[in-house]
Image 1 (cartoon, rainbow, N blue to C red):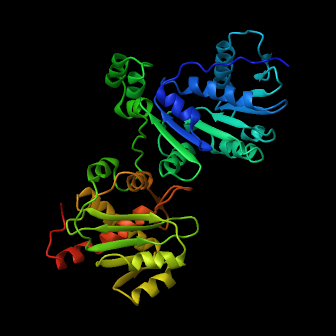
Image 2: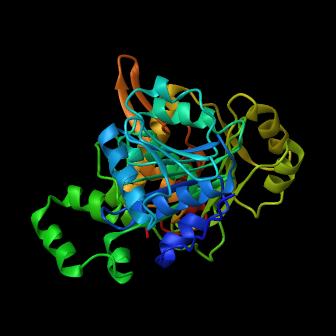
Image 3: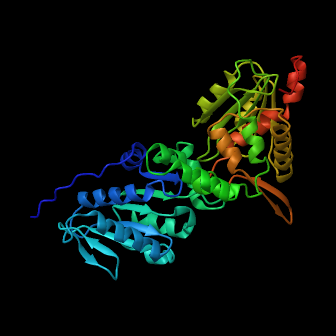
Length: 396
């Protein structure tokens, strides 16, 4: 048996972090030319070293031309030119012990079904069809293989952005990393002057996406990204005058948001508990008016809580939700309330509205959560009344 002598090439700290993360699915939003492709080539090669004969790992890009670039770069990184058995037509590299590194296109998602994969890199994920990711995910099921999705940011209307939001929210099994051009400058990969030149020459939205990994405004967010950013503030130490509570449905989170008399968030809790624990948590809240979403499965628990303390129960209809979200948008845009950085801001950033023949629909994109948004809107609903009863102003 041929012995393989391997030494990992030098890597930056952030490259090592994304290569060695333990989570199964890594979502990497990165600046152009920040070294994400280089480290993923190394990672996939290392994964191929771990598996056996006739077992494979995959590199998938939106089109074959991009996959071929990675194919050629992996070949070039090995000093022994006879190390791989190379199939140029199929873009296939076979290691001496029989494992395979396959380079494929995601342009035809149906072609991705079939072969089991022990590890996958999805390159340029923001420009890849969601159907391709669905196919890729199926190939990892039997092997429980890892996947790393890398790419530049490209708006908010794609599955990669939605997965990034899930990863930023620290969903189990997900890892998130954002790499900007300035991170790459600090690591010695990019030149600062080149970045500053690009900043002067490119449209602001393009520069933010390509170099800062920041999704551009796409007109579907009801709050406005600049307004959300300006509303971000730390957790107040004043007591709450009111609470908004969004109860968990299925795989959602129960979220409790408390506002002080100035409209600053002073209480925040996000959890997944059974109904008994949830009720106990709510009943243990400090004094303050409670506004609870009692739609569907939330109705019985809201009724039980109402026996113990003052509660307004809100049943969501499309009209009620529209009024709540328009009220929240007004409050954020007029700086009547604050927003916490982290999962609350992320949910507000990804929230959408859409005009239909029956009215305006406000919701989180498919696969994402809006529990924090709902709880904040419910807290805001009765904030003015609660703050006036506390003899305090309602703006900050």
